[in-house]
Image (cartoon, rainbow, N blue to C red; front, side, top):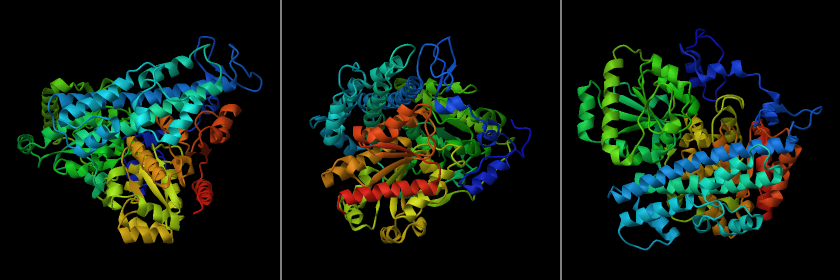
Amino acid sequence: MNNCYSCTTCKSADKPLEGYIAGLPMETSHHRVEGQSVKCGFGLQGVCCRLCSNGPCRITPEAPHGICGASADVIVARNFLRAVASGSGCYIHVIETTALNLRNTARSGGQIKGPNALKHLCELFGIPDGDPHKQAEAVAQAVLDDLYKPDYEPMELTKKLAYAPRLKRWEELGILPGGAKSEVCSGVVKCSTNLNSDPVDMLLHCLKLGISTGVYGLMLTNLLNDVMLGEPEITKAPVGLNVIDSDYVNIMITGHQHSIFVHLQEKLRSEEVQNRAVAAGAKGIRLVGCTCVGQDLQLRGVHYEDIFSGHAGNNYTSEAVLATGAIDAVLSEFNCTLPGIEPICDSLQIKQICLDDVAKKKNAELKPFVFEDREQISEEIISEVLNAYKARRQCVPLNLFADHGNRDTVTGVSEVSLKKFLGGSWQPLIDLIVSGDIKGVAGVVGCSNLTAGGHDVLTVELTKELIARDIIVLTAGCSSGGLENCGLMTPDAAKLAGPKLRAVCESLGIPPVLNFGPCLAIGRLEMVATQLAEALKVDIPDLPLVLSAAQWLEEQALADGAFGLALGLPLHLGLPPFITGSSLVTQVLTEDMRELTGGQVIVNGDAKASANVLERIIEDKRKTLNI
């Protein structure tokens, strides 16, 4: 814990939250930024290699090769591929878990909450009409069969899900992936000691991993979750620390694997469990959303209003959520679960339970989710959480922040719910783009970090710049958590938009920033892009559409970005990935990629300058389309 409570904290776009964190009697990640402000120059450039005992080798003008002879280009490309492979592996773990849970749900005759989503998948996969549970099992098995193929055997569903012009280009480049798990393994092998020394080949493998990440880890995870958990519906919802009601037993959930919570959510809704919470002295028991799994629950909030109190914040808000003292337990099952929450949980006697060993926290109880034991596991969790509530609430002080956030964030946006809102066709949106009332579309996606100006600072400032230029913003990831807590997803935010976009938003009663939810929902944005391209009969790179992962954080974000590049989209980053030590890798990603796929990486840490670049790209694409 921090012994100097007046230590400097990093800036935040969320000024009330910044003040709250600065006044906490405990150390958080926001306090530790200053102490880690001096960075390793070799690491920043990606020119440090520690793969063998001859190293670590560091590339300088005086020593342009490692002991083995590897150049800066090789070392940087190798480090980058290793990071993309790791990020892709994370997403493949998520889709594998999701597909297994859907298959088990189907085999056990469990509830299918998204029949329309199931019908859509069956049509895509060519699965005939029949018993819904048999269909759901067939869908899940088709996904698993593809994931487990060897890397030399192309996945079948890619051809059913990918946009035809993109598929053709991927085939031409030789980057159609084989089995997703095998491709991750091949990527790791390829960047090991004294193996591949061709930087371009390694970068092409990154694109291959990006495709399997996007099609399976992103797109299909969302669609399978829709079957099990219900499809998103547009609604207004509370966000921020104000969603935490100390009169209830509160469970904070963090991670990415929403399907793991299906049984627990239904159990919590039962009268028997709610009565047990009342007997313990509370009004009931609720889930508090944090990080991506909280956003996914928020996305489907209309189905769980009785037990879901709302989404509190993103990864770097989680420590503040716990510091309120009103959280009685943390359930984690994947990343964005900061190690820094552990001492806070200990000091406030907050029960920690991990449901997947990939997310095992040092001070937490490991209770792996096993579908066959779901009844027992849910009962054990509920009992332990109630015991924690009774043991801690009388001795732990509360530090609530009831005024934080807002109560009317528009959420539940998906490729299906948005099209339905538009009347069942993309034509109204296309008409607005053609007329110039909406100049273009920007996907502001991905993580939050504490270094690109501070917590959510660049993300929020860039988004304000874009909407002021009549560019509508679609968002997914921890970026959504920051934007919604700063009020940019309320209808009132229309006043921050340019005159044309403002008029559109006010006439439709929508905000200029549309909330697609968790980082997994980047796949939903890509489905929107595909459907718009199909409607216009153009390829995806031709659309007046840009991407920004302004405050990317993790290796998963690099795998996401690789998919964006494979789709041919301009990708803005506020901070460069660790590649600048190689002129070749930098050249391929920022320039040559336009000839390969149509995409490119744009690095700029200034909100206004970045918006200028993205706006020019959109305007150029409008001219090419003659609109």
